Image 1 (cartoon, rainbow, N blue to C red):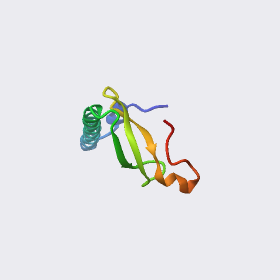
Image 2: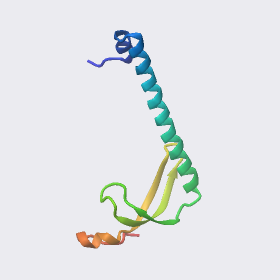
Image 3: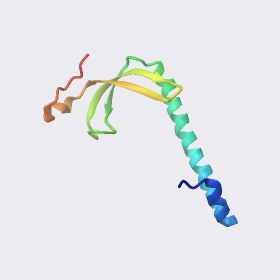
Image 4: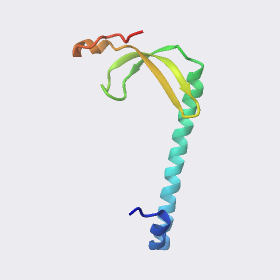
Amino acid sequence: MAVSADSVLRLLDRRERSVFATFALARTATEAEREAIDLENCVFLRERLGDRFDATVARFALGDRVRVSVSGVNLVRGWIDFALLEHPGAEAFGKKGRAPG
């Protein structure tokens, strides 16, 4: 059974409700800040479609150096698509160092 925010608030005293509301506002502000940063990055990179960049992987094989190009930007969702062009460290793992294309 899911518990609604309203039912939780009814059980809390005034001070606890204030803390709960402050936490909720801070969380909303953090989410809005992240969305604004994503949008700013998209606006900047939409003019750079096809440009190539040296980058450091932040997920999967952390710290690997790669070369990517900007392949797409979705302003509505705040997404940036990159195409992997080169992965020089991949030979050490038996993978090709260049992406197809």
